[in-house]
Image 1 (cartoon, rainbow, N blue to C red):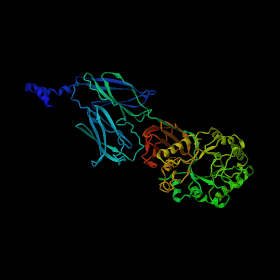
Image 2: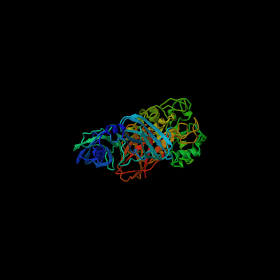
Image 3: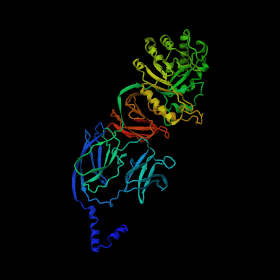
Image 4: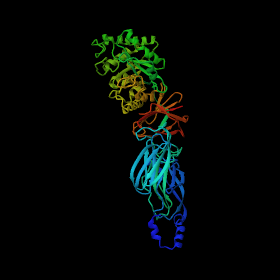
Length: 639
């Protein structure tokens, strides 16, 4: 007790002092009255009721006094509080406390909440089990009230710490509190607990002292249970003063949800792949072939391989294409080929660069295509399809041939029927419909067309209703991006999402082995033969969405920066791919219409992960909630 207190009371008789000392505690604990107060209200997202959500009222001065209920179908709740009114005097109630962090354990970031009794300097220090300082957080001078900080699981050097137990120590002036928490560095996409111990949002209002109030201040926590719909961002409301029967309504934020409609089929998935163009680049090594087409850990899972169909009519040029294609075919890979030019002798300029195919040589060109098809088949590499021409609608200074829309239509109508495998056309450099519409609208040409192929250089990435109406598969057969920054690499994942969402059955990248490709070639400081970040991003689709799957209906953009697509195999296996281009971890809910799915296993590629699996996520009541890591792509796979 301060010395001034003793001076003030020094002249009072000892008997009175003794009685005062005896009675003094009674002033703070003697109940004046006790009563039951009924609180009811509604929980909504602003425009919709939140069903079966958990509503918790906690006494702000004693959080062990907790009252819990659940909303009904209309979002209504009601509970009874046992409130003991107290004589409140200034100066004897402490307002300093440190909450348990939430979430705990955590894998990406956690929130630490604390309360200050008065304005003071605040320091928060995180220690490991050996007592070593891991991170210092200095909020500085703060006023009385509720505050919080976030820790992202990194040390003072910006490095992720090891999985394990850590302590956090709060210093506020001369007051100190210590608590422990668990960091789970193996996670990243994890299930939120059905009933979280502490919410992730909070008002920052300090608790007001009110000596006249006959009642108490309460903390109200609203959180999900297994049956909550829609799922919400757990939230905490501070400073809820209750003195009598009352109605209190709460508005919360719904977690964006995606409904996966397993029985609503979209396009057939033929596969994902890239090109091995010989002799423009060195042939692939056996190790590179395994990494490109294998489906195990550290492999990409490509199921398609694009070849160059040589303009040279010699068997030597044909033979160059066999070795890698044969090994890939034996691994179950679909092989197709594109010509960059017909033989020079058949063209207007007698050159493999530029010019156009003379009409008198249309059939000779079809025969040239058949020569390559037959040669590959004789060497045990049957071609699934061949293209008529790579990028017929753009002038370049390398091997090429110019085709007008009418020339392409005429060849398809009169000569393509003689080609001994499926035919791809027109392979426009940006899916120009003025090149493909004439083919689709000509009955003879359309009958000889199997696949509408095209590239997306500067345009063309959009649905093609006419091609779908005619029953044609749509393949994106070439694109590249030489930017190898992480943002650009993740954009490739978004690009694949866009192609799938546009109804395309195939996505095929340019060179497989290149410094900007899915496997490094050793140039530009890259490690030759290693799977690149872009390769791991591609593997998020290629490894898990296999030939024969169908894309199925779902909301493709459930929230800003998040892009979702879903796929199903003939046996009912489910695959969901989610791209998060935000710099923040985002909550996302999946709602499944298939009652047979009990769990999903997530695989994540980010700046620090390469298609890494984490613990499976249980499906409860046909749904689950996940956290998508910042700037990442995650694939969720059912059993």
